[in-house]
Image 1 (cartoon, rainbow, N blue to C red):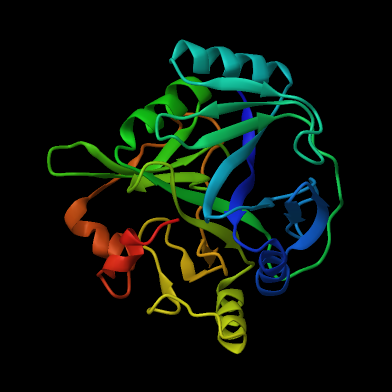
Image 2 (tube, helix red, strand yellow; image 1 turned 90 degrees about the vertical axis):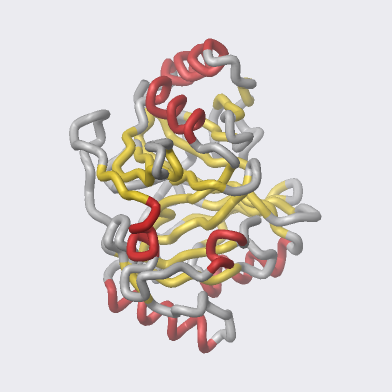
Length: 292
């Protein structure tokens, strides 16, 4: 199975026009298409058709996550693997998602949907304030079965993980590429979305992004600018107008793009204050409790 990278996040928004303004004017994405109550946007450093899909809805949250595969035959392999594991999976025809060829959608044990595809239309590179969609953190009551499926069936790596006192998986940071996480999982409501993160070019860019947020009166998490112990990134968090949490971050370390090449870093629960917010050494309850 050869998934090459995280491609996009498809999220639900309450007001499509307001959301488009947020993701273009605050995040810095470019609009690449609109169709059937959806808007498609791409980051400047990526040339595939989109990295975010905004879906008009009566609630916020995650619709699905898109991953690009290396070969069309990988779609057949993924479909077979999902069915062997007893998961719901279906093919989707070319054009159902604007700018994309046919694909396979799998409902994970966590009740999140991932969509695998091979072909994407190209829109070319551009200049802008963010580099790319870096990762997505989702939540569910028990991440372990989903992480096991991602590893065993789709060849995801686990770069870092959090274990409870009994040694059970509490949270995991998984990747299919050369950055330390593409899809992270933590405890929370079934099918929930914690945040989607956009990569900027350096630490100074994170500071500039915080300045922009303050100028536009977009509230940030109480810490403003901080760092994670996990991944070691510099970061700030805020919300889009529908209540989906966003992140600007930089500094994630690189990892091999093949499974099991580097040993997983283990964290215990008492260390997760520094693991989450390194400077403060503690986590505000709403950071874990507020999801969409």
